[in-house]
Image (cartoon, rainbow, N blue to C red):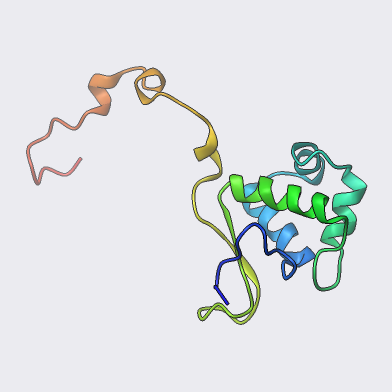
Length: 121
């Protein structure tokens, strides 16, 4: 079994993993539920599940899909570096926003490093 769960094999993802993943992304239950097109009470029940996240399979898949799109990787209990199931943030939560770097830096001349090598800054 792989240490990272593929999207189509999520029966082992726990409610606590969903809650931890949401916390890593810094979003609330209402926002995650909205992004996953489910109700907030449905998400609360999923996160409160003992063991595997309970709910309709398509709802659980939708929540997991939103979390994975935000950079979350789910780790199962067989991951060699852990004592059990967990989550990892594999990319910054803001990485999914499409931004042009040239449009976000106002004073590019101060951004570029023009110091000689070894000069610090």
